[in-house]
Image (cartoon, rainbow, N blue to C red):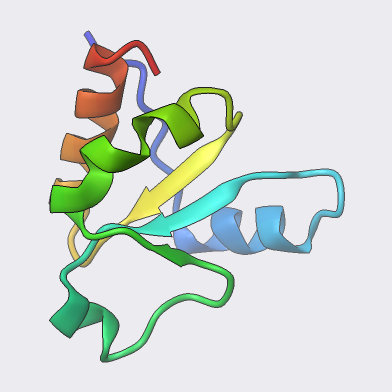
Length: 85
């Protein structure tokens, strides 16, 4: 089905600390949720705006999406794969 790699906070921290591990970090929560705090270095792209970023992410390499429970980030990953990303 979908080839989505799920990572945990420990692995994300490891990637952030590794100088050779380049990736985009994207928060897909609502603006109200983001106002409560975001991970350092994350881009704010609420889930409903994801289709506007398709061209930008098409050649971006590794992208890590996160939300509160993982449901929205999984939906974003599935959508992007359906778009050939």
